[in-house]
Structure formats: C-alpha cells, structure tokens
Length: 82
Image (cartoon, rainbow, N blue to C red; front, side):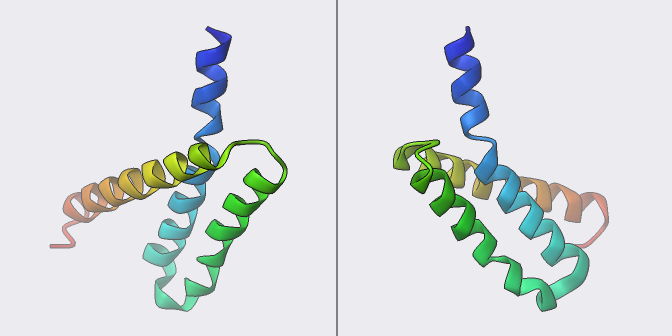
C-alpha cells in the first residue's frame, strides 16, 4: 500500500504546477504568461534531483494538462463563459 501511495504522490507536483499557472492565466490574463517557464523548471528540478524518473515527470505533466483543461472547461461552463 505504501508503494501505491508513493507513486500517487509522485505525480502531484506537475499537475499542481500546471493548475497554478492555468489559474494565474485565467484570473489575470496574458500578462502572467511569464509564469509558464515555472512548469519547465519544476520538471527539470524533479529529474535533476533524482526525485522522479523522466517517465514519471512526463506522465505527471500529461496528467496536469488533462486535469487542468477539464477544470478550465468545467469552470467556464459553470461561470457562463460560453
């Protein structure tokens, strides 16, 4: 069970980073595009520090893109954005 929990936690960094940057973009508009390099820095740091293998970082990034897109879609529908 600990192994499953450790693997699940290892995917949290990248989705959280994507969500943070997407929220900044939705809340403040294009003037926060400077925040996008943070995603790359977090990915690089996770690999460089040997906290996660490259495959986990890529999987976490993919998960982050999918979850962030789904959350943005739901938010825009709920908020009456379109």
